[in-house]
Amino acid sequence: MTALAWFRRDLRVRDHPALRAALARHDHVVPVFCLDDRLLHGRFASGPRTQFLLESLADLDRSLTALGGGLVIRRGRPEQEVPDLARAVGASEAHVTAEVTPYGRKRDGAAFAALRAAGVEVHEHPGLTVADDVTALATQDGKPYSVFSPFHRAWLATARRDVLETPRRLALPARVERGRVPELRELGLVQEVVDPMPGGERAGRARADRFMRGPVMAYNDNHDALARDGTSRLSPYLHLGCVSPRAIEARCGDEEGAQAFRRQLCWRDFHHQVITRFPGNAREELQERYRGTLDWSGDEEAFEAWTAGRTGFPLVDAGMRQLLREGWMHNRARLVVASFLTKELGVDWRRGEAWFMRLLIDGDEANNNGNWQWITSVGTDPQPYFRRIYNPARHMARFDPGGGYVRRYVPELAAVPGEHLGEPWSMPEELQREVGCVIGTDYPAPIVDRKAARERAVERYRAAAGASAGGRSGARADSRSGARADSRRL
Image (cartoon, rainbow, N blue to C red; front, side):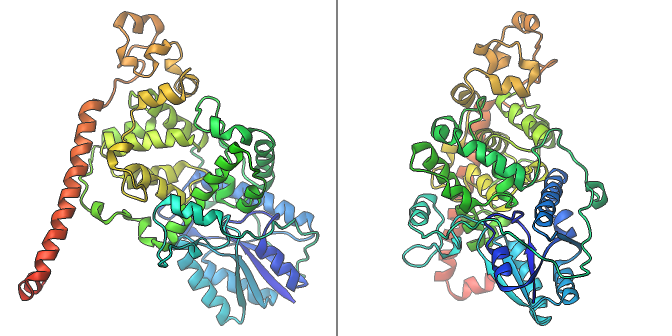
């Protein structure tokens, strides 16, 4: 008997429930990955992330080959390619890791229907998140969580499945056309990142081992320290499932640092729960009062300066240049640059979301969308908007006090004295010439006056909230006026 193991965002052999279930029930298992052009060239096309994907697929193929099998590569629409493969190998079942994103669920709906029409039973398994089914976590009245803290409490109380070991053996049926992992250029994409992390389960597990053996213990103290970078940098490997989130959580002890890191894994599950239960979040604000009411700026020069790391605000520029160099950015810097774009520059959060998704090798729709909405104060964040207007200089003083992070990514500021590094335009002109950093020549002058920009942001949000409240009042008046309201709607 033969089954398919359809890989998607679970590119590993260790702790893989779908793969293990297929192997437990069948003599032959065909592992398959389908390159879908609708994703490769869709709304969030990304050369850097696709390169990471291709490296991860090549690594997965090596692991499966070592087990006696190998990875079958197909390119096209999964609802066509996967059923065709099932028919060709005589598969009676297909085992997959359950998806949560709106596109993933829509794709699976079509593909599962086609598989069943071909006589193939489809079995979904956990593995994408720590908790088996994040959608099963709900409030006492059955509603989905839109605030993290109560979700976290429910998440901690949820039973966990056992972590599964790597299978010992895998056998492909005879005469399977395996295909090959293509080059990035063959897919019509280009690598835009200079120095990204390598993809694959081996690289992910090696990084996880290094982090969990020591640095995780100090995570609570070091995760926001920009120069030391006490983060795990596991996000790209978690995104594509090169490492198992459940297996990582199982290694978290009771120490304060380990539990602080475990909380970050919960944030990932939370964002996946939100986008599953609120699929409209993929394109619009979770908070209805801000849908279509915020007056976003169309300043293209400001947006381009932000993307290039040329805003004149050192911490913002350091974060954006790290993204351009590595395809990754420290989370504290992500918050600062996102706050700056949406609050100080007044640019629509969706533009920032799309730029991140273009370059991030860990670009995950659920997490990226959730974090952009959180910092823009239009998503799950219960705090008022003015709590999320971050001052880059103050954040630098707190999280990069020695300036190591800024100097690493903005080398033209290398000789600027520490007391001026957060606001280099404050240097006297003579000192600027002395240290070789003349503002406006060697490094940009600030593209915006922060005090004025903050005042505009406050007014923008006040106006949006007022417009929303007015709309609700109008709706109540319409409902009271009966037929007059109906005639206006017509």
